[in-house]
Amino acid sequence: MIIEFIAMNGYGLYVWLSFSTVFISCALFYLKTKKTLKKYENDFLAELHNLSKNEKNKALETSKVAQQLLATNSKMN
Amino acid sequence: MFKFLSSSNIYYLIQKLINFINSIFFLILIIGLTFALVLSPPDYVQGDSVRIMYVHVPAAWLGLACFSLITLLSILNFIFKIKNFYFINKSIAPIGLLFTCLAIITGSLWGQPTWGTWWAWDARLTSMLVLMLFYVFYILTFKLLHREELIVKVSSIVAIIGSINLPIIKYSVEWWATLHQPASIKIVGSSSIHPAMLLPLLVMLLVFLLYGALIFLMKYKTEIIRIKKKNIKRI
Image (cartoon, rainbow over all chains, first blue to last red; front, side, top):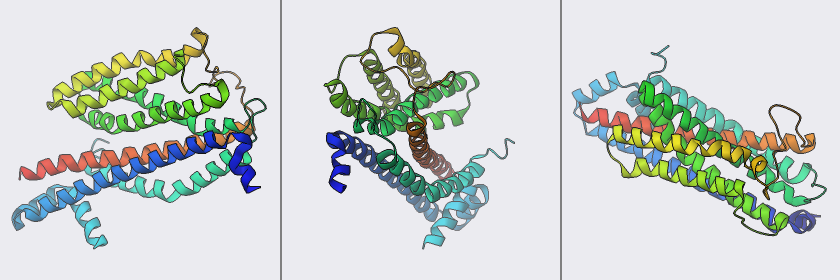
């Protein structure tokens, strides 16, 4: 029964190749996008840590994004 | 209303949406795959090769939808100069390119057992290839040009010229004698697809939509962080 399912009445090669192409491409694209996002988040946090205390406070006061990123990062650590 | 649409609020909303999509995505994917590969019946002419439709059609639809949206936002950005549209377009374009490439590849894999050839210079296939090239040109404007005003102008022109191809893709199967079959699903009028095949197709469309939305949100979030990083340097 499993062999029949895999063979798909002789069309298995085309069907499995189509589905696997789609899922591998989508998975790789997702991982690449996630990696880029992580890199930008880390760069932003590094930039924030490099600021003096006053500058950092000012940045956190004016930017909710900075607050949220810092909060998420603290939670993860 | 406009205060709600500030980048900080959008950023917060994006994170919520990403978490929501992540929580339901795999469940819907498993349901979609079960329907597409196991529960849906084989076609009486094409046999089990018809299952390729469940990845080919949603990819093609979304490839077209992404370019239509890019064109609309480009025109609006050109007229009203809304900077957010520029970032939305920049985030959508790679998703549209991915879906268009997947539609072409899976179409080729479907064409071999059905038509006996991987590729034909048929009107539908060729117009999809042209769409893929327009996506490449569009993305290249962001990579090669550096001045934002110039990028907006050139990318909008590419999108508007490329949009001429969209009705050609849609009506190519009616205007010319093509290997590609005419549309089975119509928004207006009765569809010729059996409900046993329509349901898996709609579930797989939802899977592709969620995936596209997830990638878009991640890319858009990256853009927001990039802008905020520039601003932080000004302090």
